[in-house]
Amino acid sequence: MSNRAALRDLPRIDDLVAASPELVDDYGRDAATAALRRAVEAARTALVAGQPASAETTALQETARAELAARRPDPPAPVINATGVIVHTNLGRAPLSGEARRALDAAADACDLEADRDSGARSSRLSRLEPLVADACDAEAGFAVNSAAGALVLVLGALAGGREVLVSRGELVEIGGSFRLPEMMQAAGARLVEVGTTNRTRARDFAEAGDDVALILSVHPSNYRIEGFAEAPAIGDLAAVARERDVPLVHDVGSGLLSDEDAPWLADEPSLSGSLAAGADLVFASADKLLGGPQAGLLAGRAELVDRCRRHPLARAVRLDKLRIAALVATLRAHLDGRRASLPVWAMLEAHPDDLAERAGRLAEQLGGRVVTGASVVGGGAAPGRELPSPAIRLPDTDPDALAHALRTGDPAVWPRVEHDAVHLDPRTVPAELDERLVDAIRAARTERAPR
Image (tube, rainbow, N blue to C red; front, side, top):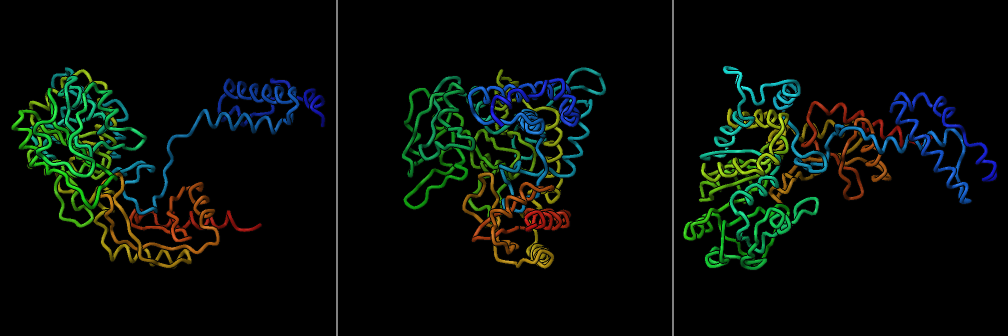
């Protein structure tokens, strides 16, 4: 068909809308009509320019549906994490506990977020959260904001006030999403003073650096490590220098580990309470990593410093909403009440090897795979380079990338890992109650890819 003929065959918008009831049902008449009109105009423009385009109703409907799907994306969908990465940033970091989910659901309706039940007067939205943060970190006072990055910006705004902040050159890191520490500090109004060298910085390097120092900042390097000819000061040594200079020592602990753990897969990972005990004046960390809660930033330490952060105008800009407060309260209570195993992150970290081996063998038998020696990792920038021995199920397939794609795009979606030219499934990061769904999803993906 010539372009001229195709132009004549372009349908009227009213007729096209009438022929698209499913599109109208899915997206509403106004949105569907606008998208169909844009599809017709795009086809007309292409045809006039001598370019190929279809005037068929089905083609125009498909164009409109694709546009609407892109403009009206679905909410995040659940996936089965079989990667072996416990705190997987791409998959939402820490899964919430059942208690946290119930608390979140209860708070989704009208709730007593800022209301005192006895008097009926307004109260603070963080009144139930602040003592939990303080107790969990063994600190004088606690506070919480919407993220660890938010905590950093708030601390710099409240305590630095445009003055100098000392940071080791070895800790000027870039975090996920291309956010660089020097740029964040500049945005917060602090003046960065680099101390030491990239691979070797000593506590005494901080003793004379800067002319108008507001605080010393120590930063968790996350996934970045320097090995070999390297040296970094201990928190206790930095604290001594900070006391000499009469400035606070602030430590970005990073992963949200509450207390020091005697576990090889967490060796050298700093903790909030451990850092405070070593002499830090203020610590902050993410709540959706090793804490096992929702995205938030925990802030704890000396009461006077926490109060300055709480009263700073930026505190409102980085405050928590009711849903994250509810989930965070439930998560902190689980830690404080000795129920850490109820948190999925810690259930995965502390899964018994015999249980993992039994599940791996059963899944391999059902799926026609075999059990191989594998390793899980903490993820989320915590404990970089450390691994947890874990069995994995190796699936035979001539095209592992295609099978992985079929799994990721299935329902339910399954995220495996592809290594050594095969799809591997790590049962450590799959809740046991999802084993049956995992098997069904893999069988469905294989059926979808089977030749017809």
